[in-house]
Length: 115
Length: 115
Image (cartoon, rainbow over all chains, first blue to last red; front, side, top):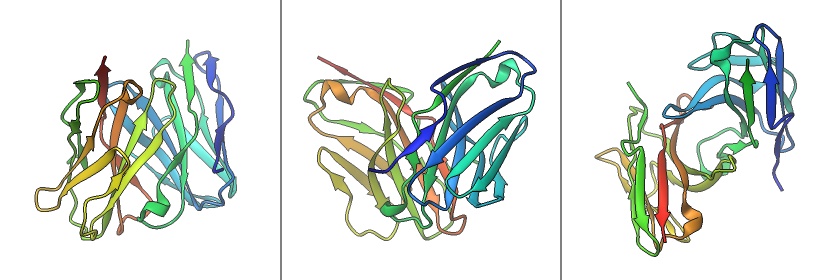
């Protein structure tokens, strides 16, 4: 059974704290993605990675960084958390290609609250 | 310009009736894939159905079918015989061959099935 796991379902952090969100996939997928989801805005891509140590900025990278040291693990880092980063964060992975075999598989999400 | 547009923020349907969720897309790539995902209140994203740009027939998966009108660039999801468990957010997404790795998501439609 394919699986994407995220380190926390719920997280509460204070303004200015450094926050790490971890994502692990067990499908040997090349691509991994971080999205944030806000009501009325859908899923917005923060960063994605198509290989180890490779990353590309998405639509809203400001205030975030990522790390991919191993193929199965993709970390999202909030260097100095702010209240406007309170959101649901979704990690996903996929293979290469556009057929149905290469759909994105999602983790359960992390609901981050920054106070 | 938006790659994926979902114009219905919320929809209601009577149990056992059929419902159509709209999705239009924008691309100049002749090779692309279209995906629909369901997100129940629990938060997980569930893949429902896929349509490739070169597929001659509309995709079907059980009670889900995709009404693909290539010239109009629309990929509407049809759910037949609605069930209470169909109440959820529904997202349309696209992946282009030329951009390869990135998925583009719409803002979603919230479907409520009324008993």
